[in-house]
Length: 75
Image (cartoon, rainbow, N blue to C red; front, side):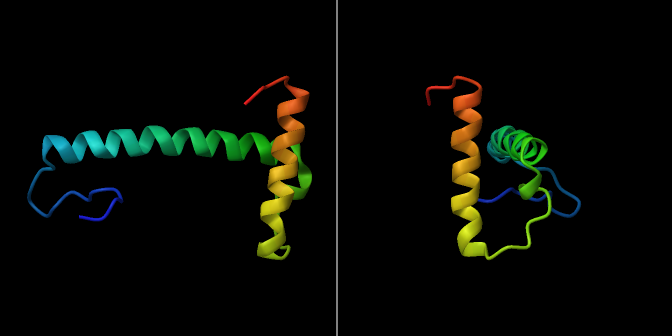
């Protein structure tokens, strides 16, 4: 199966491996969602993105760099 979340089959249960995969996927996704939320709360420009999708990556990279400097993160 592809590396995406497993859906519960009709009238069935997920295997233990599928359940573990879903839990790991959810944990990683939660980290990304929290990071995205922090960036959006810190930088108003990222709340309502309607800019060129090719440029938004650069804007987010700069915002993340500023956030790291502001919070003294080294990685």
